[in-house]
Image (cartoon, rainbow, N blue to C red; front, side, top):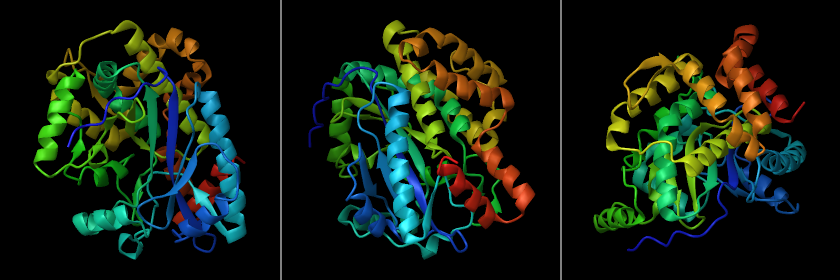
Length: 372
């Protein structure tokens, strides 16, 4: 099986996908209302799309192709408002966050779609444990080789993305001590992790052909990499973000990805190598476990530093590229949160510290998602 050609896209355009929780308004546990939500949402003319996800207590929304974080925010806000109205009709609520704090995986129902049933047959209980909620950001690349270059440059900044978006400290009623416990569920899948360090599309096509010959891979969807090329869209897709508690934060994170890509594609500031990945798993673990308080190991030098320090210096360096992408405000929002040392995982822990009741934490998170 051959890999499909890399499509042309407008460089630095962005698209955002968000996986969202559907909860009842009694105890705020997950509720199997995806089919009803899709039926109601299908009657509304909206940008992007609304589609089912693996289990029936979740739903995925996505924007169309956007040129700026503010355009993405406009589309996400429009979809969010429609979701809230439909949820109110069903007496349920929509919530952000990377995990539901106390849902029990064995109670989940696989959404009735052939691909989801195929995955359930293959992966067993892992499929229901995949009731986790992430944000994916697509960024347009001028050609296939540029996409691979951008992907491997972006890999150095995976800890930034994890720490900024972390919103999954609780799993099955317990504080995991991780800021992003969601990614531990992703790591269980055999084709997760990082893409092979290949910098030309010809090399990548050869790799894909070898993988399909093994029978393990049938399409790019079978790779659960942290970042993967999406040749049908002409993009790369960054997949490590937990779903934030608000669409404003989701759009700001997309603006950060866009600004980084603008820097890489304009300046080619470094050449990625396989040695960059020597510290990749360690950096990723640090960000998942400690969030904004993680240690970051610089791939080319081996220098250890606070992740927050690396993030702030990167944001300063990105200022002219953010300006060109109209993302200055987005970076400003994220920079303020880095300075305050406060991501969504910390917000959820603060709420639980005050309320001592995870159902109430989810109720407040649902209110926050509404934009009020």
